[in-house]
Every structure is written in structure tokens, then in C-alpha cells.
Image (cartoon, rainbow, N blue to C red; front, side, top):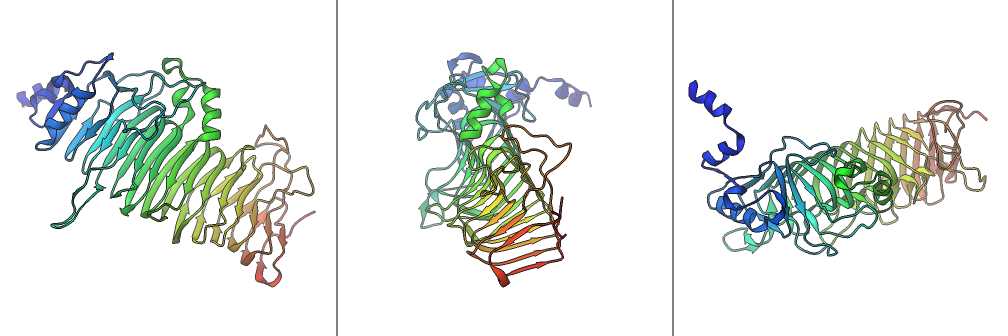
Length: 452
């Protein structure tokens, strides 16, 4: 028992030096003075750990890294932080990154190879300025050199990589998977401010998991990091695409949030294909567009318990289904509110479903020639069942509140390109208004009558 007590009382850094499979970057010459470039020291520690697999420990301090570090198979790069940290001060294990300025295609800060992980530290780009944002390469890039896939085939693929308990102060590009084949990634408990792209996944051949992510402008507002709330908020709202999904054969996403963004969640077609997956408890606030679906696999997207808010900027619409989208998008128990022009605009031949959802544009158009329907369907097939269409608290462009008298914007517009629609069992602040331009191809049943 005496030996256990002594072990518990040892400083973590001393323990790391005394346990065979834990190395520290200090052992390889790293200096936490914020001035000395530690790229080689970190890489040498990782290379040593990679011989048999092991952990490389980053003690508390500010560690300047001006180059790119490759985290090799079987190696965990681990800092002091058991969870993402507050942006109020730079404490714990902090990486000061300076490499790749003005070149998004430069080598990433951390390149994570097969079966590697990065955990428990903060990344800050000290030369980035809120009033003069410059491109930088990816902070984390999950990719490997070509490996033996079988006894006869060698190819690039990256599986079983973990990024966890990371704080990003001001990354231009956050985390990327693909376009080389990859899968079973675990991106978990990553919080921070990202400026242009948050997480991008592509060519995921086996289920990837993205959980407990928060991207928020307040991570780069504090004087300790030369932050500025207004400048960062504006830049993110006009530039950030927070979550981008290319080819993924089943992506599991849960408990994710962004504030603000140009696009919260974007689904695209790449040279590898497009996405299907399940998305539970996801949210986007203060966006121009919360979800933009350009292309998905036919089985599509299952989105449950989501909350989506857009402002009067850009497209000012929570959900946009692009003209090229022909898959299935299904929303259940989700909320959509503004102030926004529309909650959903469907421009493609998709199969759309909204069940038990809440809608409010929280904005009422003053132009009678341009009524701002909550849902505008121009193509595809649409089901809206058991939903609520609330009133709007204000018709002002730049302000809103959630109390007081409400006005009632129109609910659903079915335009001639829609192939079929089922609108049943819905209620509204003053009933449910449906502009039906497709005649008998719409089933309108058991909706609360509109009150003029």
C-alpha cells in the first residue's frame, strides 16, 4: 500500500519518465518558452515511441511548433488537459503553431497516421489576427503514407485515429479526413473557434464517429489571445463551413454545435462519392444556412433532435436542398427559427420528411409579392406531419425577441415542380396556411384551419 501511495503522489511528468511506455517531449529537448521551435523534439519523441507503440506526453507550457509533426501508428500524443479548456487563459499544454501561413495546402500541423491519437492539448496560432485573417493548413489531418492493405496490394488508407479533448483557439482549418480511404475515426470533445472549415470527412469506408463538438466564436474573444468578439463573429458568419461531409458510408454524428457560421452542415459530392448517416442532437446558431444539402446517397440523412437558427445574412434559410440533391432527408423532432427568410427551401428532386418539428421564421416580410413561407418546396416529394408553425415576434431585420404579440407568416408553399406532398396533422399560431400549386398531387388533411 505504501508503494501505491508514493506512486499517487508523484508528479505526472516524473511518472511519465518512470513508466517505460510513456516518453515526454522534454526528454528529447523540447523547451516550453514559447520561442524555441520544438518540431524536431516532438517528432523525435514520436519516432522513438513508434518503435513498439506508446505515449508521448506534453507537459503544461507553451510549446512553439513551426513545422509539421507526424504521429505514427501506435503512438498517442497526450497533453495535460483532461477536457477542452476555457478560452480565458492559455494554460495546460498549449501548442503555438506558426507553420504554413498563407498556404492551405502546406503540410498540416499534425498528420495522424493509422491507429494514432492526439489528446488533451490546446492549439493556438499566435500570428493570426482577427482583423486580418490569413489561411493556414489543417491543424489535424488524418492521413497515412501507403501501407500494405493485403499481401499483394499497397495503398493509402487511414483507420482507427482518435482526436479527443482538444481546444482550438483560432484554427483556420480544423480537422480533415480523406480523400484517401479512411474509417472508424473518433473525433470527440473538440471545442474551439474555427474560421474557414471545422471538420471535413471524405471517403469514409467504415463508420466514423463525431461526438461532443462545439465550435464557437467566444473561444477567440479574449485579450490573452488577441481576440475580438465582433470581428471573429462576423468572419465566421460570412466564411465558416463548420461540418462538411463528402463520401461517408454511415457517419454517426451526435451532440455537435456551431455559432456562428456561413454554413453549419454541408453535404457535397466529391470524386469519391457522397454521404449517408445519422445525426442526433446536432445544432447550428446564427448561421446564413444551417444545413446545405448538395448531394447525398439515396438512403440519405436521418436527422433527429436538431436545433437550427439562421439570421438575416446570406441565404437566410436554415435548410436548403440544392437542385442536384435526389436522396432522402428526414427530420424528426427538430426546431427551426430565425429571424430568417425561410426555414426550408427545397430545390431538388429529394424525398423530404419533417415529423414533429417546430417552425418559426421569426420574421415577417413586408413585401406582399415576396411572402416568406416557412417551407418552400419547388421540387421533389414532401411530407410534413404533426408539426407546429409558430408566429413571428418581429418584422425587423436586425433585431428580434421571443416575447410579446406575434404575427403570423405563411406556412407552406407547394410549387409546380413538386411531384407529391402529404401535409397532415399540423397546427399553427393562427392555423396552417398552405399555398397549393400542385392540385390533387397534394394531400392536405387534419391541419388546424387558418384564421385570417
